[in-house]
Length: 460
Image (spheres, rainbow, N blue to C red):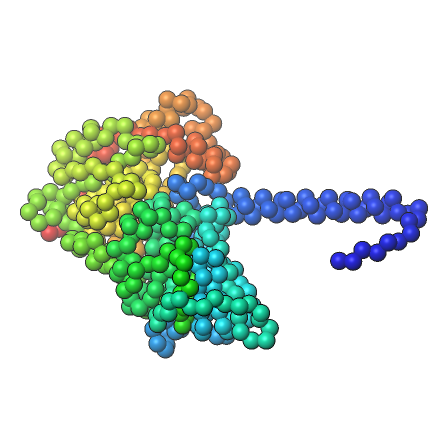
């Protein structure tokens, strides 16, 4: 912008004051806009180790997928922008042509391409906190009179399409592993029939080791660490970013090939060699009673009377197992343990995500901590359970069963008005009702719950 010197008259101080006022207002607006974008993009901003409300996205455009042409071509439409929003939580970029991936510099050179694009390939667009931990990639046009970028030379050529996604954000928490990464990845790539090269950003070695068996079911090629690989990989097509439908769910009307959560569970059964397809009231073969798996926790939301619970369940004629999964748990062995269960029970938390390994018609009992959290438990596990053909039950913890009784009297505001606490945001909910609460279940109430769970199980 050019600045012109003008003579100052008597009105100059007033004009200067007005200008200062306008600038101050604009700066204030910018600051408020930043705060809103950074911290208020969801009703309840949250930490990576916790769950969050996820609503079904009704704005997803089912016409994005065109089920004609060679494998992979249904995802490319030259009349559509290179990058486009596929739901409130996900964005997809797709291109065909001369594509050169210089991942080490976060650049993807594409010819033809209309203009430069930037994207973060992780299905939580609505969550600024999560997206801060996702690497951004720049799509750079080259070739043609209007583009001056000089692309690097190819050092590895591929004949199959590339699919770029990220395990940044909240990945590492099992719930987010499946909700943000694995289910959207399956939805977006299963139709390739293995003929796709995965480019993974934000790799954590332990995370990649954990899910490599699953990736091998979706791709015939080893995953490339796109952030650190020194090669320039060249492809005929590329797709960036997986499509989100709903939390741990798939809408078959919106997915290529009409795949469902049942298809995803079949993939998991193949991946981890899970033997049981259907639960039973008498348990697995060579057992005469159903198995109960109690998911244990180390920190908050612990069962304070875990051994007494196991004893009560045994008296109710359940074969009881207790397990405490974490990030370093042997995934195949733990998947088989979950698959051996007919009933799985645990306090609300990421460990309940292991219900993906339960046989069909098994029962999931989610223990809901005190504090009016039924809305949270519904969207995270109750709704997904139906898609997974798992019977769902809730055990609602009373004040007398909660360790909060040791912190607050019965007439305390937190105890009498939990929904008013909810209005203060996610941090208040997490601090009061999740981080500081453990539970001691009433054994009679537990036994009655287990008897009702048994009734859900199919006869052998």
